[in-house]
Figure 1 (cartoon, rainbow, N blue to C red):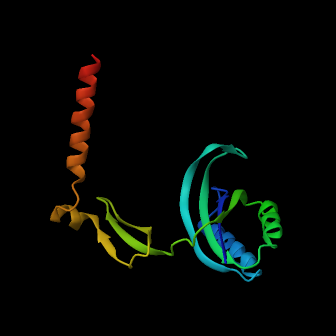
Figure 2: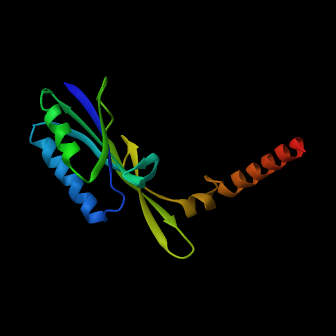
Figure 3: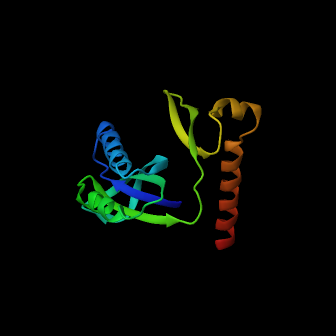
Length: 161
């Protein structure tokens, strides 16, 4: 069994529905070749190292799969090159089987509104983490970290003077 990892970047100007359609199209295309998809995760919108087609940002997606056959890879890469919404891709063979990722929900409460973010944790269980409760319990001390950092910055400024 061979394991592969495809990292591809999608145009950041597309709507969420169109990005989901692209994910489905690529998933359907790879399923034509009778492969087993291990993970297909969205990393999110990130800044590119250099502009590509006048885009400074891109939506990063990761697809990990396993297969016995590997002759279809040229055809699959040709499909990715011809797909106009995929601006870059990289296909790599892995030495070991990648870990299966499960999505968990992270509940972040803001002063104005509450937002939910999805995190990917390998071999984890679906759990909800409430940051506000964690701070009250003392398991997270976000304010102390900022204070220590500002004190450290002040010390380096004093040493520099």
